[in-house]
Image (cartoon, rainbow, N blue to C red; front, side, top):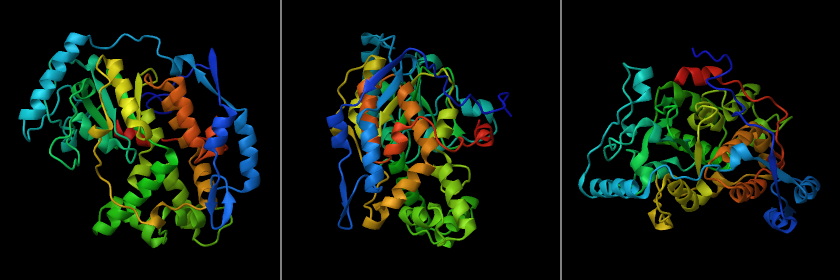
Amino acid sequence: MLPNSDSRYRKDGGSNNANRNKVLFCCAALALSLTSIKLSGTTRFLGISNAAAEDDLIKAETFSFDLTDEENDITDTTPLFDSSFAEYLKKGLSWYVANAGNKHFFYPDSNFHKTWPKADIPYWTKKRFPLNKYITPGKQTCFMHVGKAGGSTIGCLLGFSLHCDTNNQTVTSLLAATTAHATHRCVHDCSDEAAYHLFVVRDPLARALSAFNYGKQKLLEKNSTSKGWVRDKELIFDCEFSSLNDLAERGLVKDSHNATEECRVGAKNALLGTETSLIHWYYNYQYYYEMVSPDANIVVIRNEHIVDDWNAVETLLGGDADFTQEHVPVNNAREKKPEEVYLSDAAKVVLCETLCNEIQVYKTILKRAQNIKNEHYVQSMQELVTSCPKEAMEESCPDAKPDIREKVDGCY
């Protein structure tokens, strides 16, 4: 058990609310973001009733997002590596990508092995090239692999031994050369000494939808007696939640009597990350965020803006912004059926309400990211407004943030 009685680290991310800069939404731009959509022949805004949507639109037109200097502004723009050393690293990596074949390497200074000396670290933590001896822990980036946010794509580009669709998708870059360890689910191999912690993030509602479909597909692919498989089966098959839309409408909407109380409670707790049904709901943004130090340097690659954010991190390290869309592979993906991606008006509202605290953590990660400038944060908030408008504007939630102390302490 760790000494902090609340969690591994405090949950507010160490934010300082003084010296705020206000970034004001342009009314016309936000009005464009809040474009109405057609559902069942009637116009709806963002999956909620017209009256509620119009009220939120009025609020949003004059709403400002407060960005803290300490969280969001890069005060030291000096690259981590000078240009000559950066070129040396990239040349070495280029040779290994071309010549190493199917070799894989475990890196030294594993935080996981320090904590669990008798446990075997998973194969996917290996990389396809050795770590340069000059990349000490304080010069490394650690990969916080958030499930169903595009992390597999980025992990393959970084050279990790994930389920990449081709033999080697590593991009010759400083980011790949200096990203040494990873945290995924209950495998925590990141060190507090790391220069940066790299989060790959995605709109929280889109991530929740992807995680549900992923969990259901795993159930369909095989039978198992494992605890995780049985728990997922109980939630999805035994409760007869055929889709996330079905789970939301029958399991989360208040006064719905189309599911048992046990299934309703299970659905809400699973989405909150307080029960272990659906592994990527359980290991959510709150979990990964609480696994890093309050004073850690965070960098972010947004799933919606991979090229821009990769280049921003690369230049922060001292490399060149030469990453393009052609570098981006598509891994761990399959064509979705229409019913798998459909969310009704009522489903969107109740899902966003349940995900409120998760959305606030997502916003905090973006605010703290060293490579995300104010305009990038506003861009993501405009996108978030189109999925969860109320939660995008709010800074707090009706329900307290779940206490995940046991989850965090059990994995550290």
